[in-house]
Picture 1 (cartoon, rainbow, N blue to C red):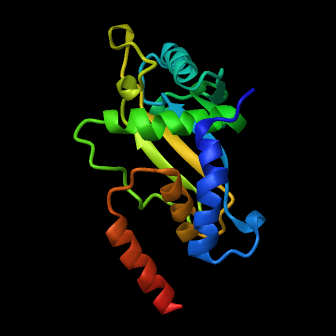
Picture 2 (cartoon, one colour):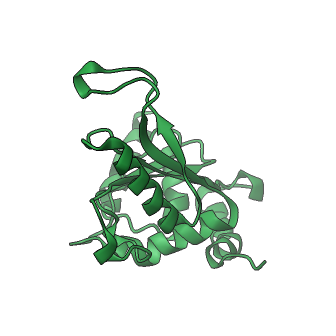
Length: 196
């Protein structure tokens, strides 16, 4: 099996670029993408069971991997939710599938977003991991628009080995993630470094 193009780009271009810009002395210090988690929650849908099946099918088409179903941990009367009821679907991508999914997301899917000016760079969790929300599945080329039964939103979580947000952001930028507000993010980062 051949190496995905983005993984080869990471090895050939991203690692040397990050070693130079971040001052790493060893290639193993360079942050890497560990996994991508795609989740969808159908908690508000009135026909929750059918909605979860739809979410499972859509995620499977998008990622090429069968997702697992997530269940509620406790009953909530206000939401008419029972304990152990199916709520959503989740899939974790690693290895070649992860690299191919990221390549498609950066080059095909993200530019399909209506009025696309880049994705926000603010959704880092403090430990170098990045999350972004997708409001509808029609932007993915694997989905046939006339086959869509309901609008399903997704959360994409990019888990990196970077210890800080700055290093995680640098990794994703080198991989080609289309962030829109990088000037502001760099200013905030500079202020945070100056404060410490």
